Length: 617
Image 1: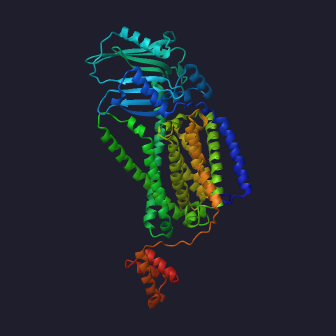
Image 2 (image 1 turned 90 degrees about the vertical axis):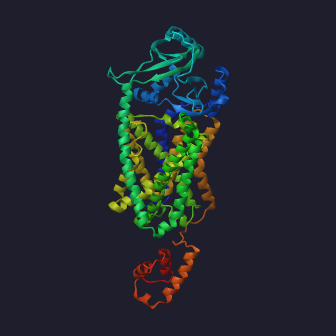
Image 3 (image 1 turned 90 degrees about the horizontal axis):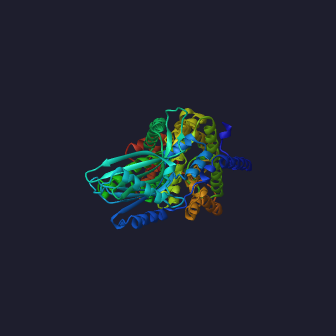
């Protein structure tokens, strides 16, 4: 395929990418931008925590010094999915505004080690209002017994004081009492009139309802909720069935991925004396180490989520010990999954596509990273990322129109849980772009080309495997995500083959970084979250500018073995032997290599000695 031949950054190519980027921006703005522009994350993490602490200490008179805290940002995912399925986007906006329904919120947990009693306070990220409160009691806790009618009156009074609750706008949905040894808890929920939302034409499929709830125990309101959407069980079962399809795709992907990993491990171990591997291993180890460190930093940055899910039936230290041990074991598998494809991909590219030196990192390791060509490739990566956004936006628009696709976008905003949200944005984008481009472009394409002797099946198969590895995302039908990412994979493969590894990684990075930071960039957010997210997007360009002004020439140095002092000592001995041994002239290079190596000589020393003594092959 001539159009996949390596290409230079000519004016014509820049023009083509520029036009495609402009069209992609227009497509994305038309079809996707509105889904983010209404997000309101004005209340920061620290402010939400202060509001929750103030509420408990001043309104509930709770001694906060006795409790530990954890705060996370969350989404009512069932309500989100239900509305995406049941309404178009304008109808969703209208529904949310009409009923003042919150589907994003801060959740603050107050707990004590080995104690069941705890408090949950839920804060609106747009207004800072306390929209839900829960006080979880031990079953043996004592409260004054009151009858159900008195409890209902107390619940209505509490909700009216808190939310201006108007009972005439609601129908009683449920009321029940739970008796404990020393108390009785009374729970009530009221359904808002005129807010029922069907999701299917079948009359037996059920409909969602907006509920306001309260739980009364003695003189205390144990729980209240301003408004939440109760999704019918039929929808949940339907959606879980859909998710099982995605999970099946994911299992198949894991099988293929472990197959890829096994091939790369086998290739590296059987070619361990390959000079390409020798010259690439330090960089591969550096990349792997960097990713491991970033994973660890990500865990620390999102430590609030770890604390939030602590189950108080065990000690806090034992919980943390189990968590970090599982993290270390999982990270070890992940790092091996990056190291081996990186090494194998370098050697495979050199073997299969020697005319595409920019298809791996070795070219830059042997020349320089600080050239104007690198700057141009980084700049090209930005256009690649923009075009990817356009491809995805168009794919979803067509999917929503003709295939019944609906998308859950709002999981992206959960990055706010991190102490430093932009750090999570960077780690997600960097780890995904580097590891996936190494595995599915640098290794899989070159290996596929070696097996199939043609580029097209290598592109298609690697893109399909990569694409359907994303099938667990909450995009329905679940197979559509695999199809959409496969299209992106084909585009990235073309970019990789024509322009090399740098624009593929940068384009992937920009694509992921933009998506994960979009709630801060496009919705309402704090100035820090906006500017720091923007800084992450500018980061590759900043590195490119350093390369531009450094302006070093990309002249590849000859490949050579890097030897220790001990190896150099042995090298001089072997060179002396080769120069003075008469039988050397009667043997071919391969015979000499085999004979000397059979006596335990280091293959690195043998190869270098044969090269430096100009032994004929």
